[in-house]
Image (cartoon, rainbow, N blue to C red; front, top):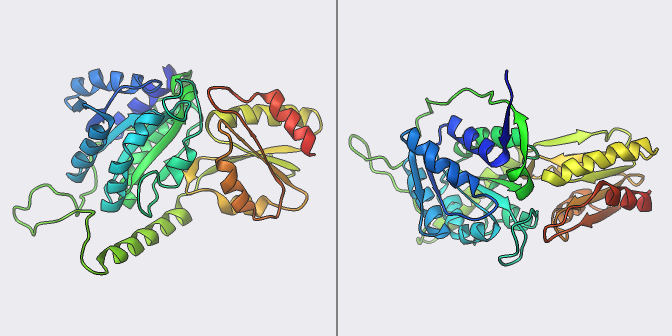
Length: 348
C-alpha cells in the first residue's frame, strides 16, 4: 500500500472520518488548529456536520447533544480549551455517552505557550471534571498512530458507552511522517438501544446525569465503577522494548517515548542494559506489567514533558519493589537523549 506524507493532526482527522465521524464541533487554539481547519472543508464536502462553536464550552456541549442521538461526534482542543470542556466531559461520563475528545497538549499552566507539553496527564487520567469517573485515554506516539487511534476510538467509546480521549502533544500533532491509510471505511454500525432518536413505536427513553431520588445516584456510581473495572481488566495497551534483561526501565509516552527509545539504543551501545515500557493507554494504566517487571535489582525512570505526573502512577504500580526516578521538562522544552543517558548513568 502506498504511503503518504501527512501531518499528525490531519492523519487524526482522516482516521476519524474513515471511522464514520458524522459531527465535529470545535473552537480554534494552537497547536490543534489544523483539525478544525481540515474538518471545515472536508466535513462539508462529505455532507457531514462541522460547526465552529462560539466557545469551547459550547463545542463540548454540542458533542454531548449529537452523541445522545447515536451519531459519532467529536471535539478537539489544546490544553486551556480542554479545561473549559471538563464539565461536559463529566456529564458525558455520568450519562454514559460515547464521544471522542482530542487534546493536542501545549505548555501551561494558564495560557502558557504553544510549544509541546505533557502536563495534562493528571487532568486526563484522574477525571478533570467533578465526580468519581474515568475516561479511556489513549496516547499515540506517531502520525500513523494518530490515524489508527482516531479510527479505533469510536468503537471503544461505543463498546463501553464512555468518552474516549486521545492525549497527544504539539509535536506529534504538527510533525509529518509517511503513513498508510489502511483501514476500511465504516458505514454500518450496531443498533444502539439507549439513544434518543424519537420514541414512535417504542417506549420513551431517558438519559440524564441528575439523579435525585434516594439511593439512585449511589447505585449509578456503583454501576460506573463496575464498568471502569471491566475496562481496566480488558483494554490496557502498552509496548515493551528490550525489557527482558533490563536493569533500568524507562517509562514514557507520546513524543517522550520516541526520545526515550533512542536513548535506550544508545545506552545498550554503551553496555547499559536499558529498556522501555511505553503505555499506549494512560487509562487504563499498565500497572500489572510494571508491577511484574519491578524487582530489587531493576530501576525505573519516568521521562515526561512535565514536572512529574505519570511518575506517580509508576510508583504506585512498582509499590516499593524498585527504585523509581524521574526526568522531566516543561514549558516547551524537550528532554534529550543525552540527558536521559546522563540520568541513567547516575542510577546504574
